[in-house]
Length: 121
Image 1: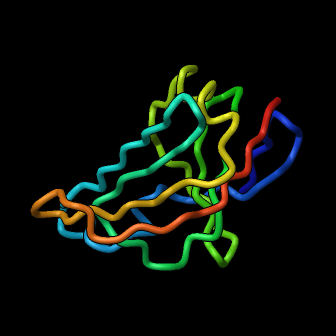
Image 2: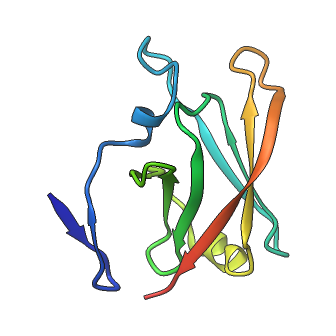
């Protein structure tokens, strides 16, 4: 099954982002927060490690949809209610700092940059 984006591109429809991470099987939720400064610097905080390498992120500036794209080409929507203000600030972003938080303490365990591709309808 495929979905057609506003740009007319077709892409496969997959499950949700919890399919990509370890630790949700036991009922522990995946928590994700997006922080974007006015200058475009962006960080995504998450409490579960990814099962596969994350290749890049895609953000649609019109629909505020954030997708995670894995090395094998699978795509998952972040499932986050992002806003017009986030979109306005992300339009100058080219990369995102992904920060894995310790599930117990909430402290940062590791971080790395991932490319961000922006789309506009």
